Structures are given as C-alpha cells and as structure tokens.
Image (cartoon, rainbow, N blue to C red; front, side, top):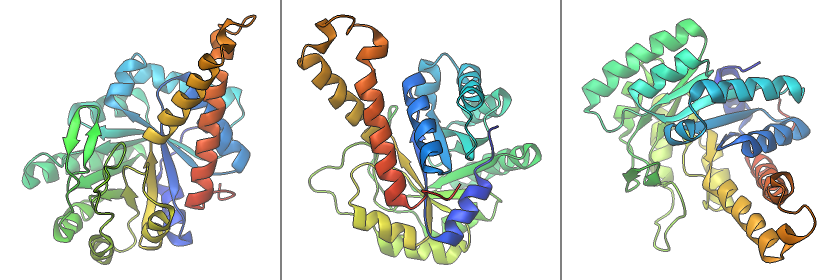
Length: 287
C-alpha cells in the first residue's frame, strides 16, 4: 500500500540519512526500483514528472501499475508515489488519481500566489493523509521543458513557505537537473545551512542528485537534506547497458530481439544505480 512520504522523511531527518526519490518512466524502471528497495530494506519514493505521467498514459495508469506491483512483488517497505515538479492542475489530478504525495512547484509564480496555491493544496493533502513538497528558488538545468539556472533560495522565503504546513521543502542551493556543466560552482552549503536554521526539523529536498560528488551529498545530508532526487543517472545507466547489448549484436542472436531480453541489461543497470545511491544516502536497512 502506498504511503505518504512524511514518516519516512521525518525518520531520515532524525537519523541523518536521506531517502532517494527515483523517477519512473515505464514498467522496467518501476519494477527495478521497487525490487531494489525491497532487497535493501530501504524506504523509497517513486517520482513521476508530468511529462513521464503523460508518456505512461496518465496518472491513473501509473497508480494502477504501481499498486499492482506492490501486491504482486510482495513489496513491504514504505513506498510513496510522488508527483515531481507538479503544476497546480497536475497536483489536483494526482490527488484525484490516488498518488500518496505531490510536489507543487509554484516557484515561477509571484510569492503571494505561490503561497495562496500552496496553502490550498496543503489543506487538501492534510485531509487525505498525503505529503506535499514545495519549492523556493529555481533548480537549474532542464526538466521536462522547465529550464532554470540554479539560483539560491532566500532563507526568509523558505521559512514563509515552510510555515504553510508543507511536509518537505526543496530549496535551490546551486543544484541543477541533468548533467552538471564543467564550470559548475558546486553546492552552496551556506544557503543550505541558513535555510535549515530557519526551517528547523523540516526535511529538506535536494533536486538534481545526478553528478553531485559524494562528499557534497554527504555534507548536504548532514545539513538537513532528507530526500534526494535521482533521474538522469538511471537513464544514463539504462542507455549504456542497452547500447552495449546491441553493439555486441546480442539482439541478433536467437530470441535476443524479444523486449524481455533486449531490456534486461538496462533493467539490471537501473537496479545497480539505485543500490549505489541507497548505500550513499544511508537508507539501506531503514525501512
């Protein structure tokens, strides 16, 4: 059964580790992440961007697939199904479809409007026992057509949004989505520290977990980051394993063209990536 991310993140913040949000794109992705979480006895958050939701035929299809897998694969670790970078309309649609958690990204609205819309969604989520994530300061890079330069959040604005009753807060600290450029300046730990001082026990979220050096990840966790989002890295490992399989001509041997065989190396590669991340984040054995 899907759960809100609240309890797993509260425990993570107290225990100084982080829970990974791994974005899903299809059945292989979902199955690989769930099986790895179960094997490692780790809580997990499945992230769905609006673009991926459309690709998978809509939010109800996603909910049906995930719920089916939880039952068929006997998944007993806590699993949250979370809308990633949701619009106001997207958030409402996911609440309706049966997600257990949403992110409302109102960072592009004027702060007053962001606050009003966040307040309304907080009330609905509280009533339904769902968790809700808000964002302050834009996360750089590109994610489903949303482009930002990686600004640092204003700690005062963070406190204002945190005080609305959200479960977790994503604050821009110079992190970006996708691959990091050569000239990336690194994470701003000063910003993170200032944000944590203003928001206290609230779990903080680090977007764009792909390509941030391990020592920076560990330092961010020590400063209150309890949820780290990973997407690009699983896509890259899937792509690399699939490429190797085809370049080795394995798809031309016997029934190697069968999608169950063709996609298997990529599926294993996702599992490996998720395992590495769960070990780095410290969530292994914490279910």
